Length: 159
Image (cartoon, rainbow, N blue to C red; front, side):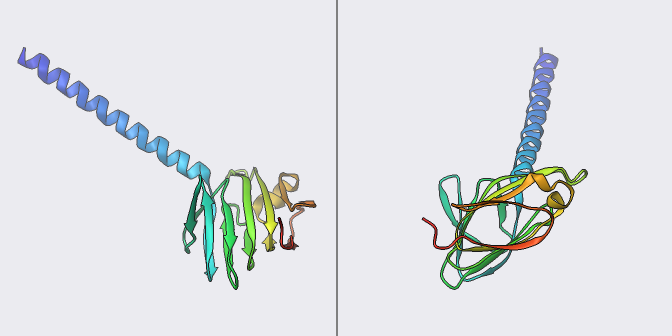
């Protein structure tokens, strides 16, 4: 009887450990898959709108697919995406990362972003260089396909 209880307790402990490790790996994989890049530079104030929350941006913060990044007066933010695309938004700008996926081994991926207002300077990264049709930026009035280059978008004051 005592051996049966010890055996069942050991089984429950091992099962619990396996479940805990599996959940940790799943959460880590999900967080990594959603990470599009990172805030590298910041002057003044900027916010990241994510999942219904407004978060003050700080250097080192992750930028996720679906995030809207907004800058204040006399402010700017620099973001480096995982494919080495560099984004620099000027004062009173709003940028939405609609879609970002990147495979660092094959350089396959997709970048779809929208500039709602203000300015955005872009230096394209690995996705645009290897799969230019997979990168696009849009404003309220245009959609720009990227062919592995540097450019600036001025969306004006936006809505």
